[in-house]
Image (tube, rainbow, N blue to C red; front, side, top):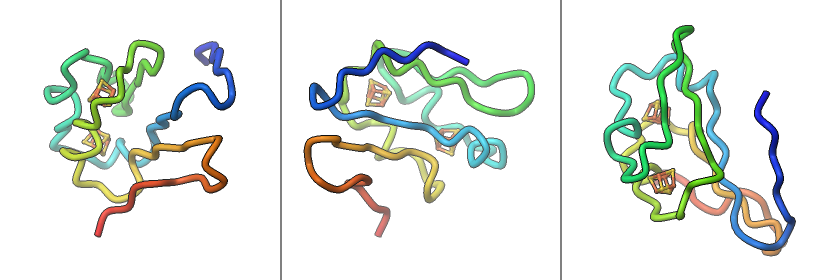
Length: 85
Ligand code: SF4
Ligand code: SF4
């Protein structure tokens, strides 16, 4: 487990559901993220390094798997902000 030092209210928190990613074969996020924060793991999941994320939104746009990426704004009163339509 990675250590998460997240100060509530400071910035949105992006979470990636590695279990969902396990069934993803296209892995758009890995090549699309300009900061290279998505790394495929040997067990077929995805390792996401949130701490260097600058929240450009690209990963969310390119990911075609519903529920894989969640953006959460702790200040906003509700959790998941974006939904695939
Ligand atoms: S975040 Fe989306 S594109 Fe990336 S591995 Fe997971 S399901 Fe696939
Ligand atoms: S929001 Fe941008 S920098 Fe952050 S993980 Fe997604 S693609 Fe990478």
